[in-house]
Structure formats: structure tokens, C-alpha cells
Image 1 (cartoon, one colour):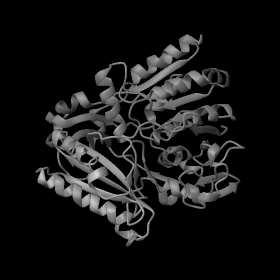
Image 2 (cartoon, helix red, strand yellow):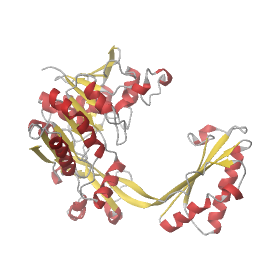
Image 3 (cartoon, one colour):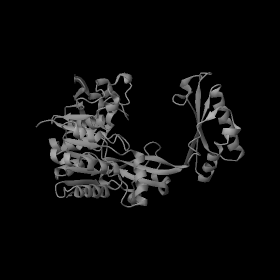
Image 4 (cartoon, one colour):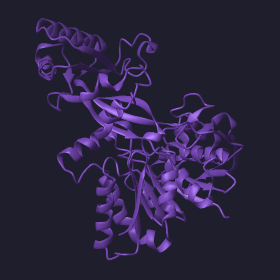
Length: 453
């Protein structure tokens, strides 16, 4: 069987709007994947759906499909995206509306993978003994259950492959693993068995390599970052995968960026814990088994990958309300910029103390030590300018709001040479915290459906 080309055009919700369009139009690909979801994204989408039952998904995805629909049909490009968020059915309906409006009704099958949203079933699970203990602290979820905003199971690549098996040209998922978006098409195309651990691990690592989009093609790259060719036209990654589990990472000819063993290694280390046990719903991948080879310009080949038996647990991403925060800032100019910023900090803290307001407070002096903290050493006493940035967090929203009124007065009653308050008073924002947990695979199952649009 010939190799297939899987391109990823989104590394997060907010990535380049043009990247997926260009991947479709600049050269041959078989699959386009799009990764929109981060842990915080689920709670944002849950709030959107609470306000409007037709919302809760990545609307950018629908706009993108509208722009490339004729190309997808003409060249039989399949699309896999977790754009469904907390409302895959609404996302599918929106895409179906585009297909009908463009005059292509009946020409495309849409698949959805749902069932990952378990927020409404948490109490039932807990009553049956599923504790959802926090993987970091060991606490049971009951400690914050009334504050939960979203709860989603990470499904893997197998449900995506099943939707493709049923003829779906576009597969829309909820909270799938980032790696599963790439692995699913490989399972479908190559008919990999559920216990073919080495090949499943290879597909998982391929997905991990491209999940962040241009981060593996020269974006956000430490190695010779200032010599990356044409970064304004950076190419997004393409996996060329073979049935035996070997694959290469490349990009379209003529695009900017750079793919080297060094840039690939940087991405492989992304979100890495134990490199011998990268755990997904599909398998456990051993990153120490990877063999990399530069086989041409902007082309790195992978081989030798090993995998092991999958666990009997799914990871669950849960978000919950954890109080409120506000962040304000001012900029102080030379001379004595850093000294002025530190005095401003002491003034605000003393005034908050006088008001009896108790918070967790964090101050940063941007330009002096914000990025590296104590590792920065003593700031240059003659530094040209420093941004004084102070944030508070607490349970009392009214108290946090009172803090927001203590920044502006410094313009006239604090240190001199101040600017940067053009944005107005800081805004109070809700803090959404992350609660990672596990649950038995036997307790939940993906819901797969395919229909003609």
C-alpha cells in the first residue's frame, strides 16, 4: 500500500486561519487534521453552550470548510478535527449547512465522535465508586464537585478510524487526544490491529510531532531561530506515513520554515514526562526507541519505534471555578525605572493592606526579571524602562474588583515618568483550574455516527 500524507493545519484554537487553506491548496495531501482543543478551551466552550445551545464548538472550523469545500470534494481530501468541542452535533449541523448552501448536498458524509462529555454524569459515576482523584494531589473530585465547569474523556484514534471506515469524509470529534487525530487515519488506511503496539506507537508519535503545527517546522524553535527561512510564510507539517509504521515529516515545497532533526527533537520533548511511557488511550509509546534521520532538505524520517499494551483507563480533563483574578500594569521610564517600579509595588501592597484586602499577590517587573526571576540576577540600574505588572487572586470577587481601582491613582500619586495605562482599569476574571483524573474504560464509550450532509 502506498504512503499517505497527513497534514496538520491548527496547533490550537487561535492558530493561523490561513494555514489549513494553504495546506489544501499548495500541494497533494490525503488528510487534513486540525487540533483546536486545550484543557482550558473545554470550559470556555461549555460556557458558550450554556448561553446558547447551538454553540460550544470552534466556529473557525466551519468558516475554513466553507473556503476549501470544492477542493476537498474534487481531490477527495478527508478532514479530521476536534472542532466539536463540547457540542460535536452542533458543529456537524453547521458544516452540513455550509455544504447545502454551497450546492453540494448529498455529496459528502459527515462523522462525529461524541460521548466524551460526562459532566452531567459525574455524580452518578461517583456514586458507583469512580472517584476521579486528582492525578497531582490525590484528592477525590467531590472536594470541588459543585464548582466543576466541564468534564471530558480523552478518546483516542480508534473511534476516528471507525468513523472513516463508515465513509466519513469529515470527522468531527469532541475531546480526542491530539495524537489520535493523526493516528485515526493511519489505523483506517493501514488496517492496524488493536494490539499492533509498535505501529500504534509509531502513529501516536507521528501525531505528537505535528500536533502543534508549525512548532515542528521552525516556529518557536530555539536552534538557529534567527536564520529560519521566510518565517512569515512558514510551512505547516505533513506526515508521510507507510503501512509498516515508518514515516517522515516534511512540508510543502516553496514554503518557509525548516525541518531538521534538531527542530523535530524540540517538538518531541513537548509535554514530555517519562519518555519510555507516553500513555494514550491507544497504546504506550516509547520515545527512547525513536530513530531519526535527515533524508533530505526539510525531511526527517522516523523508524524503530516501539510500543506497549494500552492501559485500562481513560484520562479525564475536568475544569472547575477557583476564584477570581485581576492583573494591572504601568510602565516606568528612565532614570531609575526599576527602582520606581518597585516603589509602586510597595505602595499598592500597603494600600491593599490598609483596606484590609487579603489576596495572593504576584508582582513582575517586565524588562528586569519577569521571564527568569531570580536567575536574572540584579537588574541593570540604568535600564531604560520597566513594566510594573501586579496581579491578585482570591475567592471574593468584590474584593478583587476593589484592587482594580488601586492602579490608576499611581499615575498622579506614585513615582514619576509613568505611562501605559491607556487600556483602562484591569478586568476581574474568573479563574478556571484544571483537574486531571482517570476513569475505567469500561465505564464510558465513544458515540460514533455518520450521516450524509
